[in-house]
Image 1 (cartoon, helix red, strand yellow):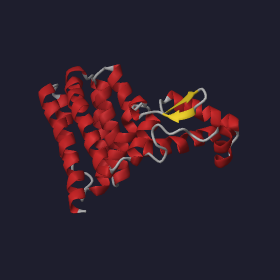
Image 2 (spheres, rainbow, N blue to C red):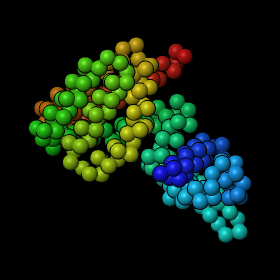
Image 3 (cartoon, rainbow, N blue to C red):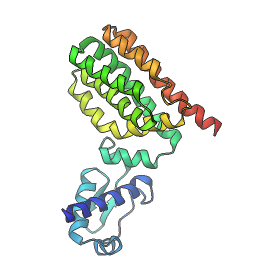
Image 4 (cartoon, rainbow, N blue to C red):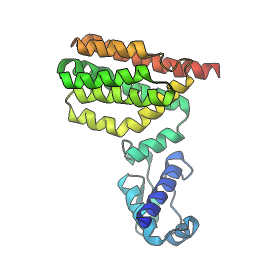
Length: 231
């Protein structure tokens, strides 16, 4: 267990450095012995970490060259770790813009699909998440309930690919929702819009669900953009 934790630590440190640009794309990493000594780990732990980073597309080993950082176009951008490192290192404005664009493409269509396909049990799950949002007393509990609400909607589509996608982007969405809740004067500012989404899905009105979800996303984006303009 200690060895696994150690190589996991190396993965996190090197992954963050690569994704943040502290270690440049195309750069050849120092020799194995040098890196092991610098990070105070065994060569075995370092090799295991390199295998993980290679599987994520961040590095590649070349004969007579060594281990080189790959161009970002080869990175597995939807890997949970890579995505988390990108979100942590990305300027706030870029993070908001890119995640908002991704949400605009995916979530309104997912809400419309949920309205067409949801079951009574799935609707109850959305209602429970909404009730938790309504009852939340701080931004942290709000964010947890908000994540549950959006996850319940994607689950109600019955589309395994969308459900899997949510598990990948959950870390990024959690950061996004937390940021929005902490920047708002009233962290429950979007509760009425979420209620409209829930009602449209309850009514099996796909068009209304699409429009209501788009409004949720645009309001969150505007809240974050407005806060940055005032800063």
